[in-house]
Amino acid sequence: MSRSELNYIAGEWVSGDSEVENRNPSDLSDLIGNFAQSSIRQLDDALDAARAGQKLWATTGLEARQSALMKIGSALMERSGELGELLAREEGKPRAEAVGEVFRAGQFYTYYAAEVLRQIGDTADSVRPDIEIDVRREPVGVVAVISPWNFPTATASWKIAPALAFGNAVIWKPANLTPASAVELTRIIADAGLPTGTFNLVMGSGSSIGQWLVESPKVDAISFTGSVGVGRDIAAAAAANMTKLQMEMGSKNALAVMDDADMSIAVACATGGAFGGTGQKCTASSRLVVHEAVHDEFIEKLVAATKVMKVGHALEEGTQIGPVASAGQLAANLDYVALAKEEGCTLLCGGDQPDKPHEGYYMNPTVFAGSRNDMRVNREEMFAPIACIIKVGSYGEALETVNDTAFGLTSGIITKSLARASHFRRNARTGCVMVNLATAGTDYHVPFGGRGESSYGPREQGRYAEEFYTTVKTAYIASGTPE
Ligand code: NAP
Ligand code: MG
Image 1: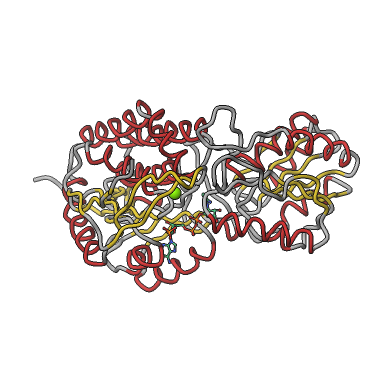
Image 2: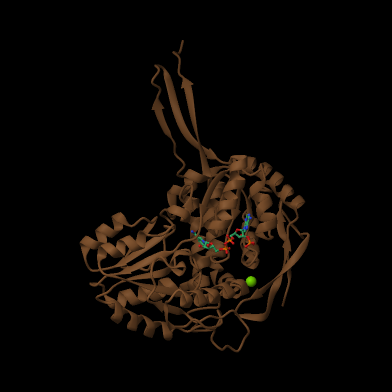
């Protein structure tokens, strides 16, 4: 059954200028619904409502703010089965991964509910006598949240939860590819009892509503997750208004497999890291940097494990790899397969589409050997179920190869050597480092972010999020002497 879904602006559900269709990438005959596209006038309404709502929200008592966040988090966790199924249907990740994502999204709200009560500042004596100083954090104001389609509920939630916890209002522009999960999350937030205008959903494309939003002088801060190219444009727009900015972007993460690696751990981390989420993770390990002493053995085991991975409909029992998210993504992936061949890589498995009963954007997990780190397939983010193997002769060469990238989100090493693990942990130029673990898979109570072109601005998640979602005020108070 298809339905028409609306924007949520100033506490009302409103239709937009036009609508877009949302189809299931596992089965294109399945129409999920039609979704409103916001007009620029609606964005302006949302921005004005957010300004008014933020003043009320910031002065709402801490326990009321805490319980609103608990309510949102609990609803997401309780309904993770049903909402995960909808997410899997519109995004294409296997149902279990989608259910896990919705549950995790709920945990961001319950985590930040606790942070509401932990907003404690600093005090100091002035260098001048009889003057006291207090340093406290205040909300930044109206926050624009712009999120991608690959983790549509979790990414949005790790931004919305701290934004609300620290007393800000939110204008959320979700990815146009995944509006259904955005509407469901908005329904839950709309039921949480926030002051009118504190939270607004404006659906539409990045080039229209997204661009208007980042250019607006009425926005105090922008939190963006998406591609580097879009990030550069957003940074330019933000600079024009001096808008506070935080961005998490693409990457080209590497997993190093050393000659002393436990091969079963290496293969499990490589397949999980490269093909989980159909390779559409900013933390995916698309470069596999392998010591020559175990290269042939690793390849043989990796290819055997990859060939048995079940590609299928996201809602079918046993599916390990769903379709890619869109026609454009699939075409780009197949172009990268052709490019890898042109660049001289050897295709070991995949590279093509499986036969399926439904029309969908399916692609087999793909392994290339014989790649070099200076090839385009090892420089550019593909966001595809494609892994390229780079052979190296030593630990030192592996570390150098891992670090030789414009990005720097995550990296990993598989080794039994404490010395190598410790050295790698300290010398990998990435924001997150994994030892004997896949490059993908992070927690919610600790900071997340990268270096180089992967990140810009303060860290997200855990207590570090306060840096972005608050602004510091230093107050000087002359104490005087009582009469
Ligand atoms: P994208 O094309 O950059 O889009 C991200 C978001 O920005 C979407 O909501 C998009 O809207 C919007 N947007 C596009 N153009 C815009 C503009 N000119 N102004 C304002 N907003 C604009 O990225 P994607 O294809 O959705 O997601 C994949 C990318 O996200 C990959 O590069 C991946 O590495 C990255 N990612 C990073 C992380 C991380 O934490 N580092 C996590 C997940 C994903 P529409 O799509 O509706 O047009
Ligand atoms: Mg869709």
